[in-house]
Length: 595
Image: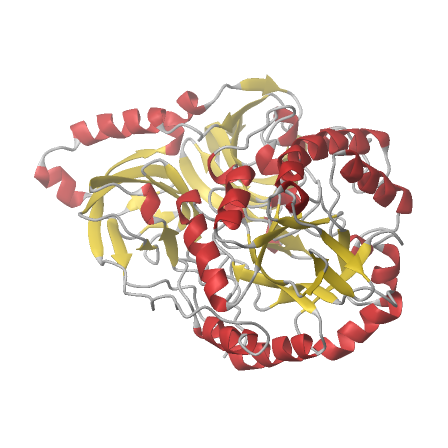
């Protein structure tokens, strides 16, 4: 068996100095059938190691319900790394940030108001201990000392930017050691004096996170750690995007120069990201520094390998730099070919409210519950009550998290947006059912708003009088069979061509279904530019959210979710789709940039 250790200022692999040249690939953001391809391309660029976070909330969506299957099969991913002859770094958190929903922390943890986030509070610590036991039981047999690829394991994540509870860090360290981890343990913090001081322990190896001014920032790290190998374990080579903002890119030549300066200084590196992947489903996070900013579906990150796994200009620039410090393979990856241009049509649609009774169970309450109190931690919740207003009135809500569509008798009145700080809307004189459809657009992944509940935060008042007796239904979209049944019935009613020709748009909130055909399944890019806001499933696989706000105008469709022949598309359109066309285009469109 091999060994990996820290001696003096070096990492030693089997007693010999070893420079870590790593790239981040999050297994949970990439279809499992594509893992081997992405890892292989990392080696072809000159890397020798793959780094990944572990998302606790994805593995344990409800207390005690552990899932390590499919895209969450960490063991299979580590085997794929080993099969390529590469090494692995694992960062299990429990907090990961990663622009991931709630920073990876399970929302169910915080239904107990006494729980202490990222500190040595007993309830939190006990839950973390159970989590680390599970995930590290996968990692421990995959350590290099056991014939596996894992050479480093990280404790917490950029903790110095959040807290300074040394007892908490020691508890996590003890959990990790007790789980059988014998490879070196690391921490990472931004190279600022307070963060480096607060975010680690003497027995843990400090690393830094930055994306520029490499020599200066390594010098700051060295001041706080006089001996040991220098490492930037998050070299930020790109950035992420928010809905309603621009698509972020960084000049590849400038980033490559910063990488070369880092390597010239003798440091090891982990590129964040080498390949970003996709926030499939409802997994995107959000930021809130006074304005709530949900993160888009694409996690392309302007990385060396793009969202679809194709090399970019940054890939070739980085490969050239890495070739000065390591022996490059002769093989190079193929350049990207245009994706097939295909078309289909959404031929049937049904209002969401006509099918919602089949997507969950109603409960009746006097006070508005949050989504979390209902055991619902992503997606949508419907709130309903009865009103009788002879005159116009103002509906006022305590707070909206994160987007609330207001309907009266099934007709949409307007939308309240958290990022606009909307809390009130005028209702015309009416009598009947008031419905509020609330979307969780992604939980905050960084800062003091971690763990906050979603849904409507009460009270709800109509002209100052509190509304009581609410019906509440968490919308379960894990299975689309009830939606398919409703759409099939709707299609039968509109089966004659004259009716079908009149269906030129989709008025949301509504489900719509259509099909397209492909002879040879391959990666596709679905054009959403003529749709409003919503979610798309292809053959039951949740691609994620789209929104006319942009910047993102396409959704990435992994070829692995397609079949030869007829493929199904189901759309939940929340606003209004001007076209029922299903259009696949030749390349991704992630939107406008600053320049």
